[in-house]
Image 1: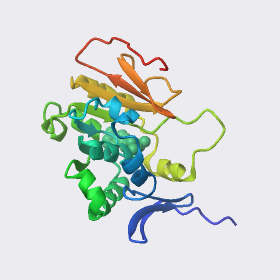
Image 2: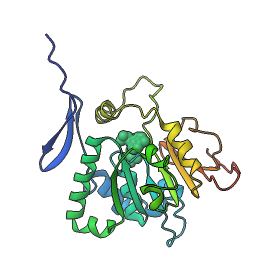
Image 3: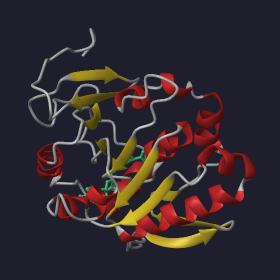
Image 4: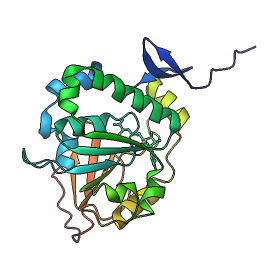
Length: 236
Ligand SMILES: C[S@@+](CC[C@H](N)C(=O)[O-])C[C@H]1O[C@@H](n2cnc3c(N)ncnc32)[C@H](O)[C@@H]1O
């Protein structure tokens, strides 16, 4: 008889809180690995995510609410580049991973200096909070930018996503309310709403006013206060 596959669960691995399951282990690590490399040699404000939130010049540090924080890589990058970020995540286990990752990041001297006190975590459903606008913690934060990176649609190609991504997806699901989340973000009338998408996926909604291509992803920028100009980058 086949052994049952272990359900995703949280456990401590080498002092780090991790999500473990049949497909491997996922933790938040902003100090070493890819994120450490990205902080020290990742291209700074030239990175697509930074351009997408409008960090054109050295003194433009927008206040960003990350409505779908996940493992917090985008929130961390934006905070270390100078944005003040409110990072919202609704999934309780993922939120615990974030808290543990932030705790360890602040124990590392270089990461602490890079991050300052610019990253704040909030466990909540961002859609429920946006529906309270202009009241509630998102409005009280006075954001310049609302940022969304919901779970990506399933790939058309036969290749399965990486094992860690499968584990993460098994916990978080498909973010089926992503269109409502974008609609609620646009309805706030903030200066800029940014949606991260796979480069080949259609925009989540009409009205994209510009877009920025990363390596495998695209950032669709909406400017709810101005009428759409459809000034796409050449490649979008
Ligand atoms: C693709 S992941 C985000 C990855 C992230 N940008 C990163 O850099 O690691 C999407 C996350 O958004 C969260 N999420 C989706 N809808 C949400 C909502 N309405 N409120 C809060 N979190 C949400 C999901 O639980 C999931 O953890």
